[in-house]
Length: 181
Image (cartoon, rainbow, N blue to C red; front, side):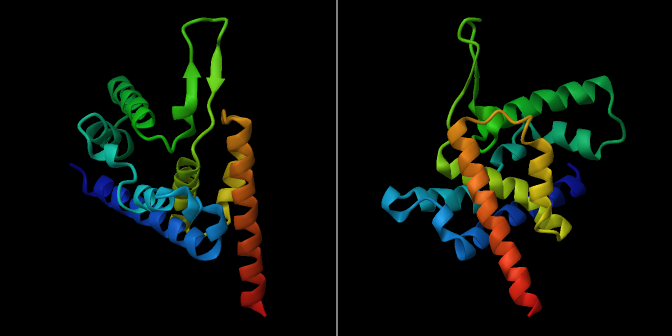
């Protein structure tokens, strides 16, 4: 067990929670509506209480620790990490890769499924957590611009992600302007 990896997991989860709290306080309209039953509660639990729980599992912990905090990136370390990452995206539906269906039938090909709103929120909070770590809340927008063409998102998911990011950007800009007055 690595102290550094444990610290990373703890800090990452805290920052995902901070991102969710910011959305809840500043843009509650982007969260699932209270009319949607318990979805807002589920969203909060995903972002604050159970985010990335699989990183503590036997299938992921050691492989992630060795890859990011080990002494070398041997072929075996990389292979173990790739398997752990595959496990992670298959067990954490807040990753867009979770929603890409690769069919056996070549005539069906790939199908990109819509992500449920709760996982879209968790995904954005996950991305944004790294901006919180860096102390630059605007970094997420640059990161998204650099990665969006690669991401396989359904039309619905992409529109929803971009709408939320646009609202976040506008709110952050408004806060910055108001803070400087």
